[in-house]
Image (cartoon, rainbow, N blue to C red; front, side, top):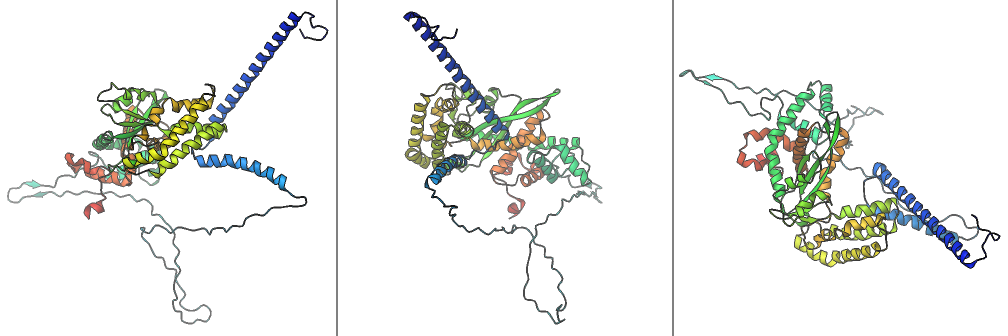
Length: 522
């Protein structure tokens, strides 16, 4: 019933009861309104995150984000100041002049052969018919490509008979990259690198070869890929042993769609990267890939069954058994990734314009700035610099986060980002006492980038066996790239030599020990 002066009761107790009821109803209404506003804000943030994941750029350049937010603030302040300082009748403003830089065209690669094409000159002066004398010449360079050429190599083995004993002699047949195969090592390397390096499925390759009047159907190409993978399996095993012999490795995984009965399932591709260059190590870098049908924790336990070093990874719960102190042969030491922790704040700062998230990004970027300066230095030197310059920044970040976290609701998005780091603070700060540990797990994420790009081209792996084969090829090509050599040239040379190579010296064919034929001849 609506209260009016005429309907108000005369009794004081009744008035008090009506006042309390009205006050309670108003509090409940405000609470509902506040809850609705919070839900609206949460849904808007969720929509913005989904739009960013689908349409936004994946780069997390903090300087661009901070500059953009500061620019918005500066524009507002400058507009206010301009209005306040503007004089009546004064129009326009002074603009600082600048000099536009002249565009510079880089020269064409010097190592390419040059073919001179001389434009015919007139025999006599076109004006008077007099004799001409050369003053010089102007040279214009144009980059050109020679189309791919195909050829058939005929290996001839002549037979001879002895006139004395009538014995027949013939040189032995050379080894082939594929037993009884008709593909040479360069062709096999091209097919493999196109499939796993350039993400071109075999059906597209078959169509490309057909346009060049070379008929190679998909089944033939698939047989070649499977046979070459079996031939190269000893090198894959050597690379995996080398990776697991490291003191510190990076680990990560990504999704791989796999064809199943009438549908696709989501498999996983795992990678473990050895890269000792950040702390001055001289051992060559390498990447080892594995495939699994699901993301169960048993897979990393199997991959790292004999490993007991340092693992830099995200907060995936499947790695938890590796960190158990009762694990045999020993627990794996966990090192968290600051890039993952920073990413949660970065999204909130970019999408939600949250001041606390922006401040967290600023503080973390200060740590990253120091880490960039000490990248590649010896481990002992990194520890000393971290103790002087990084440790105060880390302590300040922890103090600030714990103080701000106490004021936030547990449902706040910024609070969840803080909890991600604070609950794992020991793993996040382990790098301060160990110079071998990097601040991020970017080495593993870079190794998986090719798979993330390739998923859009090959859509899915044909089977579990195909996923395992792909992991082996990614191991070879990824390791070759980390060592700065041409994967296709290396693979072509290895396929031509591996059958004639002694099994005890297979390590000579590994990417970091490989020499080009010209280097080997020299």
